[in-house]
Length: 244
Ligand code: OAD
Image 1: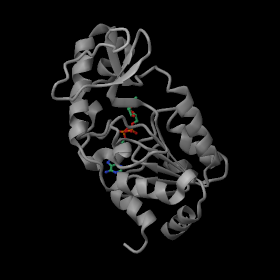
Image 2: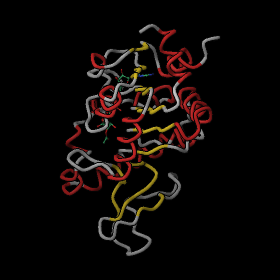
Image 3: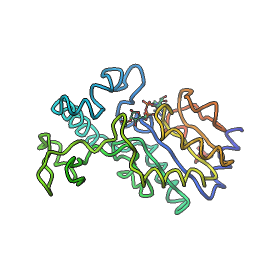
Image 4: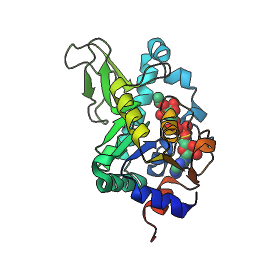
């Protein structure tokens, strides 16, 4: 497939499903997870911070890390990639669905509505006792851990950690959308973390076109229809705005 054909397929598609990963927020200044120079995992071991065991062992350290990331994403702004995807959503209407692995809330801040956050959200906490999910206070005044507004028990970050299940309804909705999609866009993800990465394959299996936007080759590349080798903003612009 050529870039022209990829653009044409996207323009003609009645149903579009989008999967985003950390690379979609890189141009907002938020580090990715696995990029050698800037990624979070280059500086920390995941099992030290993003697992239920780590939290049980040392909740203060885990909360301090998430509180810092919460502060950082609050100060970050959606970038052109978030805005272009929100524009595509307006164009496709009910035929649009976005599943993000990102926990930064930037798709919603750019106006996205038909979306699920498969790995949780940094700006909320979840009660381990009664399951209540509540927004965190302003990052400037927030001192972790937050107390549950319903039962007063300590709350944990509302993030899906290694070894935990994804929110069931969100994953089901995403799976359906990717199965039914004429075109799937896979933007800024290394495709190493399942089940999210498997969504791309659902569309391929069902006979749809799958287009990746990523400056680098990924684990998914060999299985996809076409790859735009560029950063998210320029890659999406090339697919959406052929005049530019
Ligand atoms: P990764 O850090 O694994 O991958 C980021 C991808 O973005 C890489 O393939 C980069 O080549 C690409 N990239 C970097 N800059 C980019 C840019 N400006 N535009 C487009 N792409 C760019 O991040 P994810 O795939 O999102 O899970 O990682 C998946 C999950 O692993 C995360 O959600 C997180 C982590 O463990 C949880 O926290 C549960």
